[in-house]
Length: 336
Length: 88
Image (cartoon, rainbow over all chains, first blue to last red; front, side, top):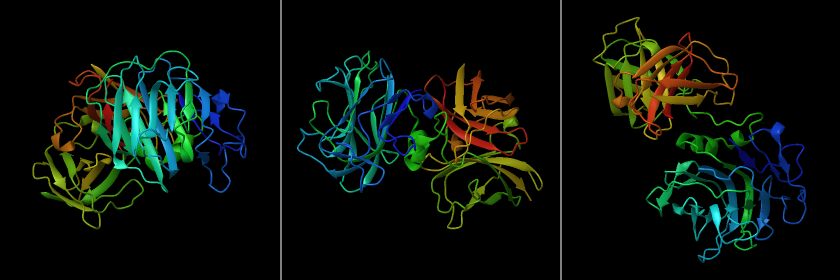
């Protein structure tokens, strides 16, 4: 896994920095021309983001995408203004096919003309494009994510949620063009179509991130800057065995909490299965299951487990998934 | 045969490396309402020094790229959880 980041929150960084393999210890490239306050980088009163004022996009050497068969790109971005005439594209990040030219790109993330756009356009990979359903506004932050891998459709995500309106409906197999190419941030390689706004970070991975990983990074973007080896938690939420108690009987009444003990009120569309075993390694077929359940305002769930053979003092396992698909939980329930 | 891989970490980013005797069950479905009996189970998996766990699934009907669910617990049954995963 390789990763590029913009990050000048690191105390030893004065400008933009590219990291590889997700580790500060594995720093392989530090772009020297830019320091805070230099032309084209004006953080000043705009916090910790890099200000792109429609000029001076940044160009970096390509480190990871030669022949890559997957890409996931994140950008935390705030537009001060957008050009929406269809020809100026507010380009956030792109990998060019030919260094020093703007003619072709392997991948590009931009707003074109007024919706988020992610395209994988390298000749070896064929053309795949996705546009968001949402019209992008100025004056607010977004987490953009573009994702593709060989054999899959491209998709565009806003704030961790898939917002794709597919322009390409047939997956294309292939790879990024081979060789070291330039990566451009904040504009097109010819200086046109630049971003007028602020970019807090960009991370581009030469691999596929799962839906829940995109969601997780959007909700907790600090993970981009996790020290040591980069990782994305496999599941962002409630992937924890939680001990619980409930009265025995055909109706199981249980207050759902997360691993921190916080109740989970008003969950909807819960899909569940009840197992009569007390350890996961001995689980057999569920004895009761259902869908469409909800928790009330206090996080209480009531489900019918008539099929169980368990009684008071026995322990079973309740598995749950919510309607978003982002919450999975496993409760180990002792009947009282 | 397929492989399920994941990196175990807490929500705060703490990795769970070098765990032993992990108990697990694999379901070929991703929706608990559709769960049938697990296709594979075990009780002797480990996470490596990087907190990664890799489980070989011999009973699954899934092929690379398809999704299932992995239930995990520590040897004392009180930690880990339920994960939706794609097999390789």
